Length: 572
Image (cartoon, rainbow, N blue to C red; front, top):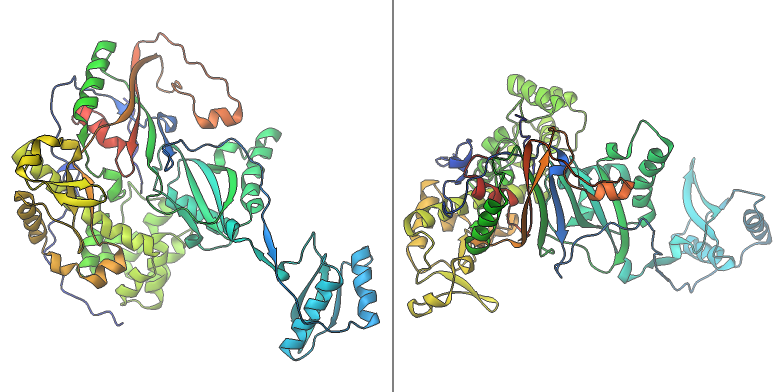
């Protein structure tokens, strides 16, 4: 049997004594994953994510249309010319130099720069007025300033600005064996820019082939297109550095006025293969499909929400408790099974020596979470709060959201255990754009997939039934109350609170069986195959069975939780 691979989804430091931390790191139960919708369907056993192409995710935009990658064309970027009003008379000697640059006799020319900044600006304007194919810049050579002049391919960048409708570059990214966070860091490293410039609607799995839209502020499409172009050329030339080695492909470039932000998508389309499946009868597939379409599955946050070590919620809990020392210790905890060798070596060295400066030398890249924390500790070994603050704000927020997620999971499990799938008076539902409690008379008008449960925060409506006391009890067990999540904390970590459906019913669901002969047989065609023009038409009468599920889920719902429902713990 093939082993399934893990998913990543991946002031002065005044220490506050940590409140009682009950959350521990073990599968399912400690992540709140203990209940199921029911047992009215055949139980499925098998293996998912045995091969990277066995788990495919395609983002659906706000109009519920799938993300596409069909073109590598680079669109024209529009600029607005800036008005130039102040000029100086150029000496004939300077004009001669400019003509030589324009004619190609000189690659660049150099003239003395006025000491006064306003006079230098007038000189730059005058050079641009002479011919807009000329660029000029002020540089310091030795102890004096000079104006260096060269030819450009059009209008000088100094005297134009990007059209407001082209402020953001949008593009599709097809990726495999790399998480959304990691691909953002890699792009930022290649382009020598900051990861904050990139935006996306949601995080996608590492282990799988995923496609989504991303945006980058003030970025020229040619720079991103060049990254993919290099791998395409290598593929055609038969280079040892193949297309697959890039881990991602970029395309469908377009300029927009606004960027892409978390939650901008409507959901995702999934194609999931369960290999070595125990089901070999299509009628049983029909029963499973009917059950899912009728009852759905419990809308838990999946394991990938909690990181490789299943501990992001623990870090979030410590941050909310302002116990930064413990939060750092949890982030830097070595785990040989889930960490890259250099990361494990660095964290093991720090665990032994508590010397961040020496430990960080083990890392190949210093821009990951562990590298950023160790870099901060190397400068200020006991300022653990500052070490946490050195992380990107999205990462800090992710930890705190993970804590909210496990509280939700526990609340959902307890609600299902005590009340089953019955709609209760006082349950929360959307009424227009508002979240309201339903009355006893309204109960028959709603189904369980319409019922919402809150994620703790300062700005949430709580249920008007026993779910409220269940939530308060869960927080009390962890040493936190709603008062501990104040306005300052909520703003800092974006935890004002939100709502999540108890149950999700998948859309456009299809389930079918495929037969195959060996564990490495390819069972579905991917977007990667289409880009390379790979022919694929799987026909096999082998002895092994695989189940292929294709379905849509709303944003933030986890395909692995649907798989959990049909497998009841039997799918690896």
